[in-house]
Length: 139
Image (cartoon, helix red, strand yellow):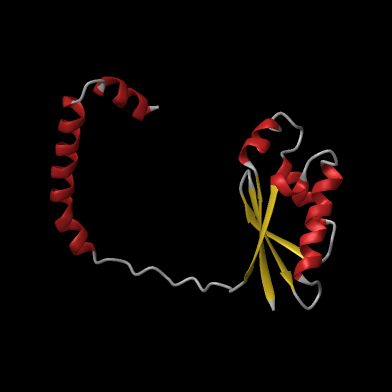
C-alpha cells in the first residue's frame, strides 16, 4: 500500500537559511532521491510530499531515513524542533474533466460582467489611494 509522507520544516528556520546555496527542502529532497524507496511528489519552500510503498519500507523506517537525510545536511540542528513528519494513506486522485459551459450562456453574462467591472472601478476610484492601487495593479 502506498503512503504519503508530509515533511514540513519550521518557517523561521528556513528563512534563516535563505542565503544557503541550496534551500533546506531541496537539499533534503536531493538526499532522498539517492534512495530508491522514495518518490518525491511535490513541495514548497517549507514542505515536501514523499510517496513510498509500505511493502518496500516501513513507516517508522521511512521517518528515520528522512530524519537522517536532514541530519546529514544539518548535523548541528535539533531535528525534532525543526522537522515534522506526518504519514497519510495515499490515494491516487482521478482528475475529472471540466464541463464546458455553453457559449450562449457566457454571451448573456458579458453585459453583466461589464456592469460589474464598471461598478468595481467606480468603487476603487472613490477610495483614498486609488491611483496608487491602480498603478500597482498595472505592474
